[in-house]
Image (cartoon, rainbow, N blue to C red):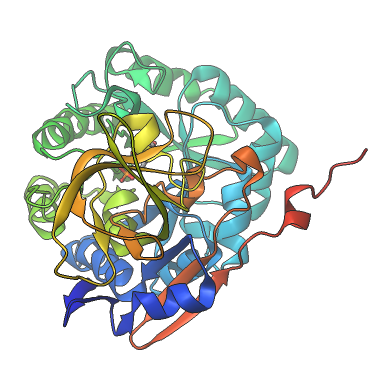
Length: 412
Ligand code: LLP
């Protein structure tokens, strides 16, 4: 995917500096091969079992990325009407879409019903009532799963942990059976599965596997009560290596453990991976603008900022930053900061990093997931372009925004 050859950093067969020169900086670059190989690790790992890999669109919703996955046969996990629209624009099949999220509006539910999505992952009884009413108006039957909150600690960053009682997500496991029971009375709903998602960037798969057991037992109880439970949605959450030397779970190994538990249970499996498919397959390229020293700190000022990649500022997350051309100039300990007027605008802090000079290009690594999608126009900065590399070819899948784009829809 990304590697050095003769001290030059490549994405597949293309030197990243060539792309930066043509597309300008900052820019996001994705490896199509990297995305597809991870999608296939899920899909092929589940071969022979009835299954659907529903890529979590929120991780990276660029049409070029969605189209790549749609062509490979992927399903999609969406959390808004906008994401459904993108999936359809990219050629995705609505019949392979699950709709998750705690706050679906009636417009969004109606749009999803009109397009005939696979099912809704529901998070409250009030939401079930809304879907039932809207399905009745359209004369259709909507399939649903309840998103269960299994009260398991995912052991990840508090902002992206979702499976504990204190979180807004899901329905407490003790209450779910009563709700499936009451939903029998809703004539335009059909129970189809059980679902859960306990958090993101999980480096230990133990908690997810623990949840699989709890959910299988629940599915069994529901079936014996006469509910037509056909699938089991395990959510996403598999973590990736952000630091050199991090041990991330291997997709194939994780899927094998799940298979062992699900084989022969007569349930289709659904998974909703986002980060583990696109995260490591993307980088953000940036150019060094200035070097600056204060009394006790060294700064590398670059042209990418928190508006382009929010994760370091929001979650204090670590992204490796490497030069596109390795030189023999040693290293420094510095903060890598952007041009935004906030002290919280940094890409790395107190980091040992290549001793780069103004004009040099660097790659902020593992930026393919929750990178561009969390970007903004803060400080009236046009958002960067996105590029997809396939072998020795690359193409723009999103153009850099212009100053005109910044004020689109505004009036005096
Ligand atoms: N399914 C549901 C219901 C989710 O809420 C999420 C992520 C996923 C699947 C995909 O999870 P993944 O496989 O990507 O871990 N902005 C944060 C991550 C937020 C994740 C939200 N939900 C970050 O940059 O780390």
